[in-house]
Length: 221
Image (cartoon, rainbow, N blue to C red):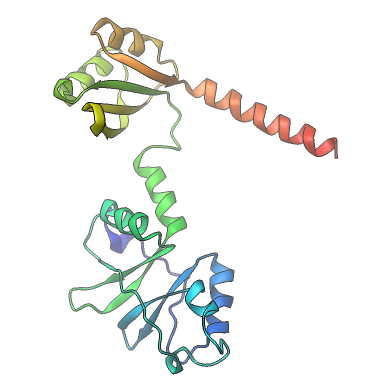
């Protein structure tokens, strides 16, 4: 999934003739804290709500102010992982997208990025989750996949977190089946340490309980 596939078709860019008040109004409408300033396809930079609050006269055109704008962006051909890295590192609510000539193409919103990431990790697909803890030297994707598939299941997504302090890895496996006990038993037979597991039924029941508790608190007000 590339940056060009994630561009929002509803969030506008700002011009230097727009005022700070205009920018804040658009930010409130689209629930973002940043907007790009673009003149004739030239990306001038991102302005944040904090930048605008610092202006003496927010009702004047943005071009009348000396603002030090940050200029983060991705190219249209970059992968979603690179977009996520930039947004996460700089805490951006939108990410500008440029072409090879560095002309502005549009922006990717944090909200759209989250929805697409959910698709990548199969968050919307019913299935259980298994967390494994193992030494880095023992990690073998082919063996893990074989154990899962021998238990009549498939891996829908895999997340790996490195624990540098003790040279360990934490693996989160999203599977395509709710009943994951056969897979857990297989991992245990091969000596894998199960850190945690969540079946689809557990997740569903927990959600129902939280909704019920919220309803009870509301009715007691």
